[in-house]
Image 1 (tube, helix red, strand yellow):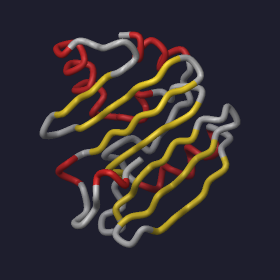
Image 2 (cartoon, helix red, strand yellow):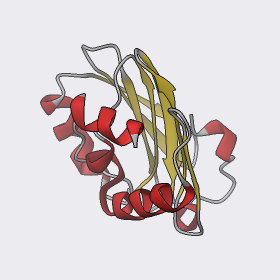
Image 3 (cartoon, rainbow, N blue to C red):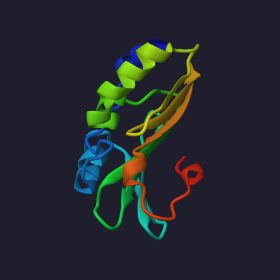
Length: 144
C-alpha cells in the first residue's frame, strides 16, 4: 500500500476525475495552480496540467461526449489518486488489496478499469483508463 500512502501524502487534487465531465478541468487548473495546455488528437483532447511541483497530469477527454476516459501522470510527486480516479478509486483499492502491491507498482486489469502506477521517491508515473469509454480508434499505448 506504499503507493496509496504516497498518494495521500503528496496530494495534488483533481476534480476532473476519470469518468467525469471535461468542464471541471479548468477548476483543476486553478486549484492546482497549473499551466494548462490543450492538444486535439482527433477523437479526443488532451488537457495537460503542469503543476508547480514538476508533476504533469494529463486528462484525456472524448470529443463525442466530453467525458474524461483516461488520466496519466508523471513527475516527482504522486497525484491524489482518489480525486484523479473518482468513482473508480474504490475498485482500484479493492483490486490492489486482492492482488497485493509490489514494491512501488500497482497494476489493475479489470473490465471496468485498467491502471498501472509505478515509481519511487521523486519519480512517479502511471495511467488509468475506462475500457468501455475509449473512443473508437484510440490506441491505449498513446494514453501516457
